[in-house]
Amino acid sequence: MFNIILFGPPGSGKGTQSEQLIAKYGLKHLSTGDLLRSEIARQTPLGLEAKNLMDKGQLVPDEVVVGMIASALDANPQARGFLFDGFPRTAAQSESLDKLLRLKNTEIGVVLALEVGEEELVKRLLNRGLTSGRSDDTNEEVIRARIVEYKQKTTVVADYYKQFNKVVHLKGEGTVEEIFAGLCSEIENRMS
Ligand code: AP5
Image (cartoon, rainbow, N blue to C red; front, side, top):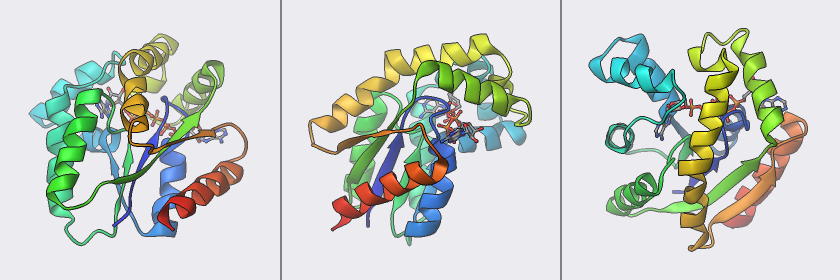
């Protein structure tokens, strides 16, 4: 089993690259953002609570997302590996993920960190907001709040995995194909 964390700020291309990576390597895609949006669409109590925070650009509580990931891991016992997208986002989530994976006798193989300048992130997300229907993409203030939240709470995730020598930084600007090729090359280095 080979497990990957695709890491980076909002708009860095995690979702875009995930689609191609899961197809190429046969991984199960676990995006906490997508899982939360599915709860919102079904108007569950969890979804209604999460929407309130997501619309302000704030993270939802650790126990909520860790619970969702634990259920998803249990629901996919046959997976060849997992691609985590948008998770973990805090030091506590990183530690919880490692514990959950240890219980399944596996671990994170590599953390691929996409790097994109702030103004490019804002431009990409405002542009996506024209068609995505995502309420957190339509307002520049909320987009900037998401980036602040990333800097304050999420950059520590890379520091956490650095101590295990698992982090690779890659340029997230350029064509989707160029970035995909760089990601594949790092994955294959680590797999071999
Ligand atoms: P989430 O859904 O995870 O959103 P995000 O991290 O803000 O990331 P995005 O989906 O906005 O961006 P992305 O990096 O996937 O980029 P994409 O490929 O789409 O989280 C949303 C919210 O949920 C959070 O704010 C939080 O409230 C909550 N949440 C989620 N997980 C949580 C957790 N673990 N803990 C707590 N709360 C959590 O690309 C963006 C745009 O750029 C697209 O339009 C794309 O077409 C374009 N693009 C992609 N690549 C390129 C390229 N190379 N050049 C030009 N444009 C490109």
